Length: 409
Image (cartoon, rainbow, N blue to C red; front, side):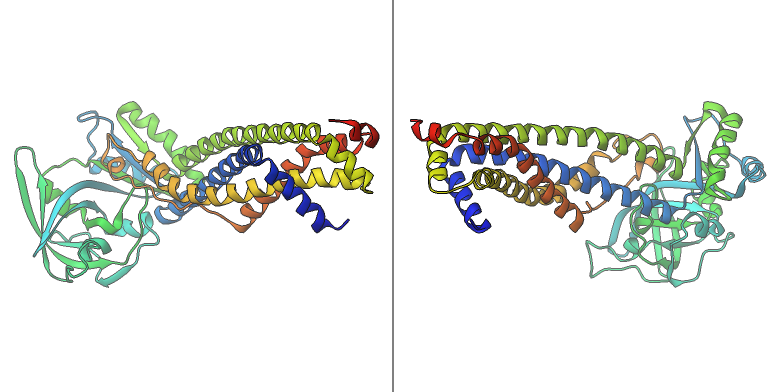
């Protein structure tokens, strides 16, 4: 008997028991859907974390006072921290939201200020599109992120090089305005969890001090010599400042998040595997019931010349078809669910009520990774579950006594 005939006969057997077959297929579909959704989103988020480290740099450390008045950073702190072993450079750091006005353009942006010489260390992939880089002594000049100069929601409008912009910010008692000249515009950089440079105004420390009128720095950024020096530096910072500062390090946070995601993924894979086991048991139950109901049919097949192998092949083909159909449906729904849930998961990971200005501009965006290997492996795994679950019923049907089967009512 040809394989095509076996699968045709097996498919007819599934059609004759539509409701039971659909419910059994549904179990496989749910299991494969869960596996694809989980693995694609995990891979996408892992790629996002790697991209974050490459953009921001794995050697950066930010220190911020935990509460107002707990510690006040001055130039003394900057100099003292620059002398710690393993430190490449340090600088004051400002990060806050302000309102930008330029002609008819008015939008909320991020005001980012530090030593211009630190920009390349903090953001190694940031490139200048036009203009000249800021100099440490500049107090009236700023550089604009790409989306500030070219608002995506207003493509007909843009801020030109050397034009003036007004920055509105909240002081202690009122809203104040400061005017700057645009000396540079940066190329599109992309969003990162800590610094959304494309939606930022970049200024010098001196410009920020004049603007906010404070002699204390809200944060300090430290660049370590290497990723290996980050952990020792964090320990030294804790020894120096204790609980008066919050330490933010992309490297340590990415490691911790990756560990959490990995553990969560293992747990979810176990859950998905359990669902596939349950689906496999459902297939086995369905096939056993089918064997019992088709006892006389099996006797007729044996009387017509079907061998034990042919009978076993028919029932294994039914089980394989259940796995294949469920796998295909699970793949299609899994791909759609991955693309839909990727945005939801990213929103869930946003920091809604952050205590620091850096955390308040936290942006997380990733795309699930759906590879051909994942799809192929999921499909064949679904078939394997079906065949393995149908093995016992197929053997049971093949070993049935044809004479006794024909006598069955």
